[in-house]
Picture 1 (cartoon, one colour):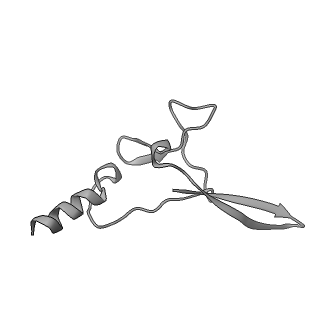
Picture 2: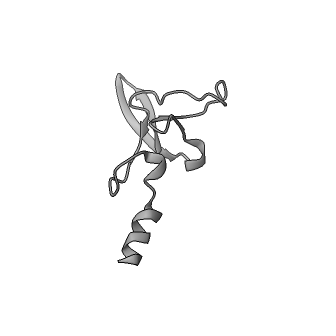
Amino acid sequence: MLEILWEASGGEVDIRGLRRVHPTKITFWDSLTRKVPTEEEAIRSIDPPPFKFVYHRCRTHSGYDTRAGIMRVCAWMYLF
């Protein structure tokens, strides 16, 4: 997950940069909805604001994001 850093100047909004969000900082609610902890909501976390984060999901295996790691795909390649 990447956080988009926006910069507003002169009536225009541009992307100033991208900041990596460490995978341990992303939580999932019911294995479906991703949440981002903040200082105010450190335990329950919040929904990511629109146009604030970029999230990539590897679609090599169907199912929940929490169970779709690359290790499972590599294990099947190794076995067969």
